[in-house]
Every structure is written in structure tokens, then in C-alpha cells.
Image 1 (cartoon, rainbow, N blue to C red):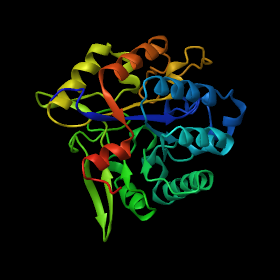
Image 2 (tube, rainbow, N blue to C red):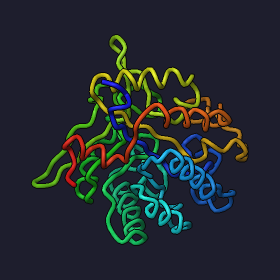
Image 3 (cartoon, rainbow, N blue to C red):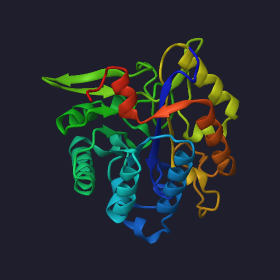
Length: 287
């Protein structure tokens, strides 16, 4: 099956440059207001890029930003994109505990519902932190009305990952008439190992040919991929902080200057739609 006949999912995790997990040791949540915000201008650059290629996407919005820039959320929706939640405070799910996680998720849902006038359907955890240590988060999602999740990454990583998870969209949880659909971050299988695709750091750090090769393999299987990026990844001029990250090394600033060109190639080579649309087309999500 040609990559041009499969519609994949395109997503944007709307975080500011200083809100990433790699900077937690340098930038405390209580100090976020002290840092220069670049999320509006960078997200609008992403919106312009998507408009140029006539692509609609899902924007998983960190709602600390939505509180401060509700007009940005309104613009995303007005341009025909899907709005979903990325939580409120960008704390790793498995470090929060169930009660704090529930409060964070519900707060994020309330903020977006107030801005949009309707509930959001989708969620993505900060740094894909739904792992074997935080499977209880799936119950919370279902209980709070989330219809689909895109947080599980079927790889091994020091920060996240569930290497034994299913690789393509599936119903992960149900209760009565409600169900939760999982859209795992995309991998391609080589031997007995899952290789990460997905976009973000993998698109920045690795040659574009790797991403194109992997996504074409997935599409030839008749399966769909989900791609993501952060608005700060197309901003080479962002301020610099020294950090070893959570893995002992940070890749935050690597190849920022080449990211937009890679995105343009990706948007040329593949077809994309919002996450919910792709799941509806697969019969996994109601209209």
C-alpha cells in the first residue's frame, strides 16, 4: 500500500521551550512565569506551515499555556484543527500519583472546555509517561471522559516506554458504554526490536530518510502512523539553558535549525489528518 493512500495522524504538543522534562531540575513549575514565553509565535508558525500544506492536525495543549493564551486555542480550533489536552503542569504521570494526576487532568479539561465551549476527546501524557508504573492513569482517563489516548510508546527508554505494548491503534479499556482507544506512538519492527519513529526528537536527531523509510514500512503494512512535534523545535533562536536532562544528556537544542525543512519533506511525502479523524476512519472512535 502506498504511503500516499494511507492517512496518518499529525499532532503538535503545545509546550513552551522551558516546560520540557529535561529542564525540570533548572526550571521549577512555580517559576514558569519568569521565563520568556515563545509558545504563541512558534505555534502560529506551525499553524502557517500546516495551512501551506492544507493539513489539519491535533494540538495537545499544555493548559497552563491555554490559561494565558486562550486566543491561541481559539485560533487553533477556528482554523479547523482538533484541540486535545496535554495536561496542565507537564509533570510525569508516574511521578504524580493517582489523585494528583486526576486533579491535573480534570483541571486541564475544564480550562479547554471553558475556552472551546465543549469537552475535548483526546489526551497525551507529558513525555509519554503512561508506562507500567502508571497504568492506573487509564482508569482515570476513562472516568473523566477521555475517549482516546496517545501516550504509550512501545520502546525501551530511560524516561518512558512499554516495549511489549501493541504497536497500532486499539481499544485499551472499556466500562459499560464507554471505551478508551489507544493510539500508540509509532514504531517500526526490525528483528525482535521496535524502532522509534513518531517525530519530535527522532525526526530532529536522525536523518529524514530514516523517518521516511520507517513510515513507509508502517503504511505498507496497511497501518497508520502518528507524528508529533513541539512548537519550540522549529525555533533555533530560543534561549539556552544548560541541562543534563533526565537521561544524563539533553538533546533539546540539537538540530533545531533543520527541523522545519524535515517537516516540509514529511508533509510532502505523506497524507495526514487529526488523530480523532484517523481513529474514526479505522472504526475505533465514534463520529
